[in-house]
Image 1 (cartoon, one colour):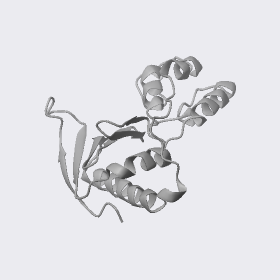
Image 2: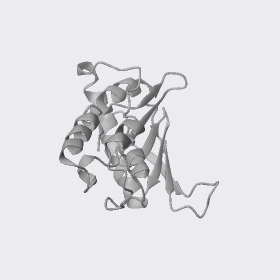
Image 3: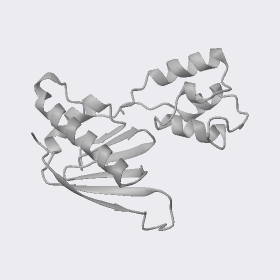
Length: 174
């Protein structure tokens, strides 16, 4: 087991204390630098940086940045959501580390879907049936992995199939 524990701090962004968004910072008890390229390969990270080492993962509308001794998560719903996300990551880090001999480390990020490609397939009616105020917001969240073709009720059958196939090229972990 590589990562045994961490200490977390939950707060609102300092620049906007009235924000609905909650941020979680976890200080890791162990240094996980060597695990980052393996984690990048296993989780299909969107951005991997060698110096300083970090891995950015986008999943479920969250942006998670994993550093050697810290994990930063934005847009957590509450402390329970932060705990679930941190525990999921701790398990992933340890699982990947245990299987590292079977994994080809990856030292670059994966390509991301393009917002305009997604928007072109949407109805652009801004109807709000998906729960988002505009099709542009829907497309931005789809780029982050927060929604998919099935989340847009008025999307036509042909465009639904095209959007599913397009987003299917990109892997989002949950």
